[in-house]
Image 1: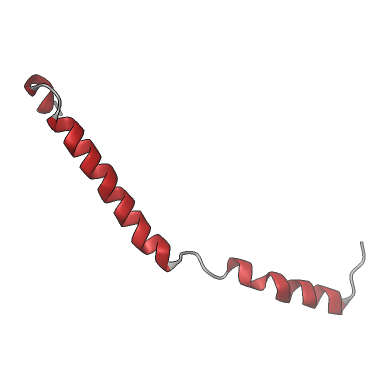
Image 2: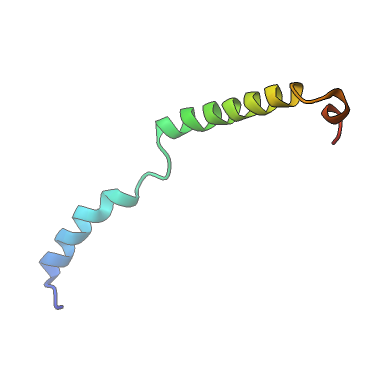
Length: 57
């Protein structure tokens, strides 16, 4: 497959935007929110355990 210089430039311009952002604003909001939900779930489930198992670390 032989591409001309113009075709290569056009392809690079079209795909350049794909790898610019490593994170998005929704990721900055969602990751801590999901971690908090997981923490609260685990904390609540630990409280439901029998007293003998609660303090095992």
